[in-house]
Image 1 (cartoon, each protein chain N blue to C red):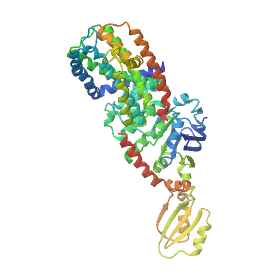
Image 2 (image 1 turned 45 degrees about the vertical axis):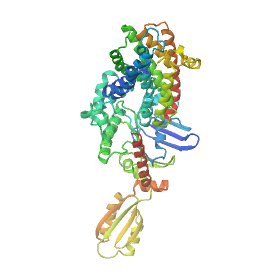
Image 3 (image 1 turned 90 degrees about the vertical axis):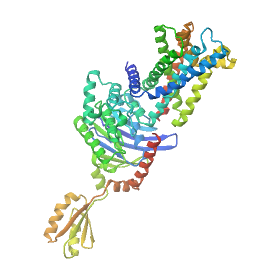
Image 4 (image 1 turned 30 degrees about the vertical axis):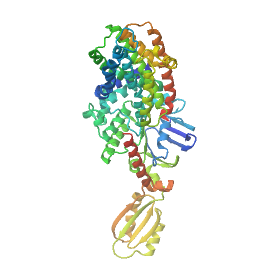
Length: 332
Length: 253
């Protein structure tokens, strides 16, 4: 079976100077939800615009379900749908009319049109407002309408560029719940760009981290976090000090990577905290050590980003957000 | 077939947008109405411009209408620039619709606005006292000519929009195109009274051919030039559609 997305050594240089993509290679399996995570300006949008046949790469190859995005663009466009980062519906007509126009452009047969539009309105929870002008919609409703447009054809793959940018947490959750239902029902592959770590963490099957036009790491959210070296189990103990022999014995246990003693507590570095914890509790019982409190400290994707990109995502994100807001205001 | 269908969808879209909000069209009609209600009668009193046997206001009515519809079409490129800011254009490009059907479809849909503008101005002209040739077939043909030529003018604006990076810049340029086309045409005076250089320019000015065709059809009834006018407008449209389609790449990059 063809890979949903297959990219080899993709380079994009704008105006002969600006290197937006610097040799990106990756592949995405069909039916998966794939997140490209990185700060603004990392090359995410450029990458997506190449995959969706809008712009040509400077060098390298990219294909979607086996079709080359440069030479077989028309075939690619029949399989995909795309929601750009910027607003992509007409605000001076109703939500229903937007869907009607797009369904005609997509070539949805006349006899199926009404049924399909009704379905996507229902799936996106917009049936009640379908005849209102889009101008009156909230940000979350506009996003849902845009995704509804992308659902009109049952695409093999959906490209979403920052699908929940500027939405409040409730609206984000609602967008993703509906997307996941759609994905499950039709086996659609979802490829999305995001600079929200929690979004990549919660809603993707696989993540690639991009920074300065390069993929710096990839894997599932769990794998990426685990690749940092491990997770910390912190035990706060009751009563007496732990003997040195016990610490030594802990260090020799196979699932423990390291042990640090801090006051009355023990910090134990393990590979997988959830798996290690039951065994650890058994050990403590055997040694008659009673515990007051157990906590697990897990690395975040931000830690992952820090490790692979050498900088934190969070600080950059905020500046990017402000610049994005400015652009939106300027654009009216 | 598919491309034709996409063009019709773009036109349908424009009809729907206009249906929901016509305010812009009404405010845009103010200027041409002033030309007809004030400029026409005042200049007409001088009787200095040879307009044959038609009153001056009647003579300039087609020119004023075409100036107004051309403005509408040229500023339509502005919509395309706006759509570049927003994601609509990006999304359209990722649909199975071909690029040239998007360009031509968007251009032709400016004709919807142009015709609507025409329908506002015509009754006002009638009230002012302009006498039209009462021939429905001629009127239909004039409407079609206005519709088709609007597509060409909108394509000019798409072409220019592809070089402009900001909408503010575009506003000024839009004015700078329409006014010379208007003044260096037969809209307000016959070409014969122009200085030779202007006369030369006027003969390659597409606006002149549109005005000539529409004037013949709805005011004078003199349509011997009509085939030439239609050929000129067709050539203009085709060249503009090709140029706009080619430059379209620049808009998306």
